[in-house]
Image 1: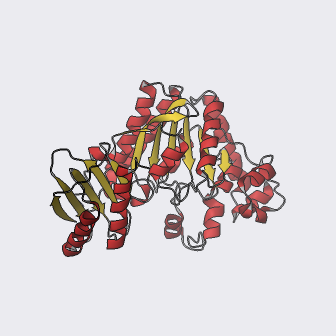
Image 2: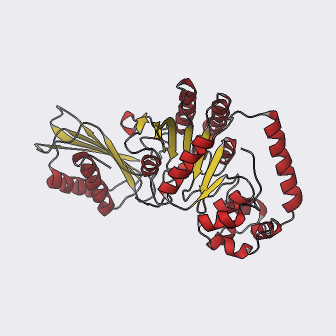
Image 3: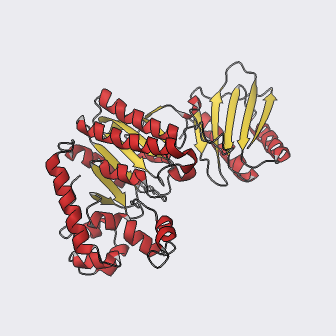
Length: 298
Length: 104
């Protein structure tokens, strides 16, 4: 059945993306592994600390999967939340899983947990790279209303593959953060069209930060994740790949660093009607732009 | 935060052994964890809520809930972030539906 990925909860997403009936949760809510910090601040906790982790199958292959719940504190990463992600990635190495599927929806670090949250995110980054070094592909899905920001935006770009919908957003600093730091003249966080042009899935696809763009549909995300798992080549970072990535980023800033709006970048990439881009369905959009987009290395 | 506990005895309806979680701890919403509690002899409900001072309303909503379902040997744990009584009732019914119809 076709359903909106955007509107689904994290639990609904992980069940819809993995093979039906295959998911088995680790540290489920009944174990009540909750944040030790939020209670001290007299703030509500969640029984899964906002992330669901476990084992399952994707296209028949044994994988580890996690889904962040954007509704709970914006999907922010606290100490327990981060430790669950790290443990899952380490388990993937130990059990030689066919891949790790991360359904990210997060504002980044949970500021209530301060240093513990910051350390947690850096440990997740290291665990992603360790999984890749061990030959395990890490696939990130971004399609929730809160996007994927902050340190977890970096985690996403540490993965082998990033799959997004147009509604999904991926960046380091969120729109409000940029506006607060640099002023509304620099970036108007209330201009939704501008926010999505700048951080949304289509722009990330065009400038090489995302490998697959799909419609907002749980089946579309599932199909893309199965394809990414099947197509995953060597997963480990290599010096050559890192240098190529650095070169791509250098060219990108040289070519587009002066642009005032992403639409100028799309035009410069050779897209004939850049103003039409936001209205296109994923299939039409990728068919029209595939030749023009920057090919990022994963 | 405020913690409220209720206990209703003499229920008759049993639930499946595997626990279920419904809802999300977000503004105006709540999560409900429902678990089989064999031998406990009651439907025990623990609520942790961010909205203080609504004990009387919670008690009325929980009594209504027990009247509707008459659950036996059940443990219900709620993390609440200011949900309205109607939302609380819907979530509780969703939790029971997940426990009695095989879930999801």
